[in-house]
Amino acid sequence: MTGPAALLADHPPYRVDQVWSGLYEHLATPKELTNLPKSLRAELDAVLPPALTPVTESTSDAGDTLKWLWSLDDGALIETVLMHYDERSTACISTQAGCAMGCTFCATGQAGFERQLRVGEIVEQVVRAARRARDDGRRLSHVVFMGMGEPLANYDPTWQAVERLHGHLGLSARHLTVSTVGIVPGIRRLATEALPVNLAVSLHAADDELRDELVPINRRYPLSTLMDACAGYLQAKGRRLSFEWALIDGVNDRDRDADQLVARARSLPLAAHVNLIPLNPTPGYAVVGTPMRRVRAFRDRLRAGGVNATVRRTRGTEIDAACGQLRASHEVSEPVAIRPRHG
Ligand code: SAH
Ligand code: SF4
Image 1 (cartoon, rainbow, N blue to C red):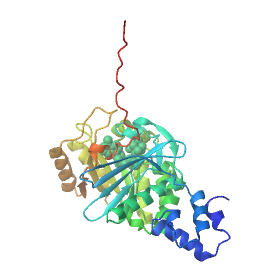
Image 2: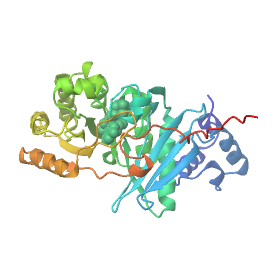
Image 3: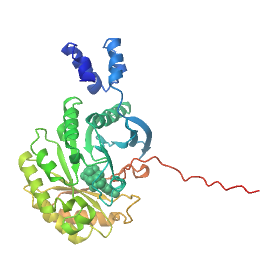
Image 4: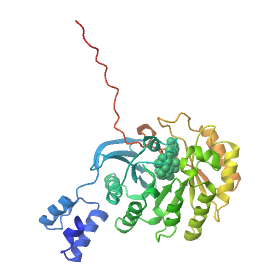
């Protein structure tokens, strides 16, 4: 056993409580835990090096959206986004470096998979965002697992992170949202967990032919199986789930797409809520997002069909921090051409 648990094994329980409450509730670094003996502080600092080293930090929307690019201990890069809204502050966190799911329209998918994140790497993103929120005079209250990677393809660390965010950071399970591309075994497992987190399913297409193309994992878990798992989740939790739908111009924004989506959403025991996101631009996908007028018409058609639908406000597009734009690259400027000198 190494790490803080080994270090604290011989200390009385109140010390252990002081450490956890300092690190998580008060968002302190080991060095800031001034209620501990100095030697213990130094030892903790040695066994708890930060998992995330900031590489860049960008802000947009007049400072209301922040994006960090972090480097991990092996040099892998991930991103975290913090969004301040009028009524809440939300962190959007990564669960993998890259993603293996290959969704065509997503920058993370275009870049491929690097590795799974460990639980500490997931939780620390929230701790860092919560510290920043506090410094901005805000309180981080919501976390969405919608950054880089597919949470249910890294199930155990993701779930342990959920438990720590709830247990140590005191975040309400109802303020935590796990987003999945539709990993059916993961959804079934999630249905057996005690904490009632929100589930968002990235649907994007309501017929198999189109979904196979946009979201390749659909070939493994087609819509009938996915809907069955969603219904099972609802029955187990009694809570409505939501479908994410990135609107792509001329691809999945037609009337018939809306009608198929209505049928899918209403096929569940409790109709799903639909979150519409106009597609954000990514380097590897040429098709553009649906224009706003059409987005509203699509939303209205869903509503007329009896489905609750909202349009998600796009945040952080200028800093590539919006949905689907995270790809964890250093911005490398074009090398300056050096002309050979003759003579
Ligand atoms: N892998 C998980 C969570 C991360 S993706 C998932 O796919 O659900 C977070 C959300 O951003 C998903 O709903 C995803 O479909 C959406 N997304 C991906 N690329 C996008 C893009 N270019 N524009 C808008 N949304 C996008
Ligand atoms: Fe992975 Fe989600 Fe992007 Fe698909 S949309 S490639 S599952 S991060």
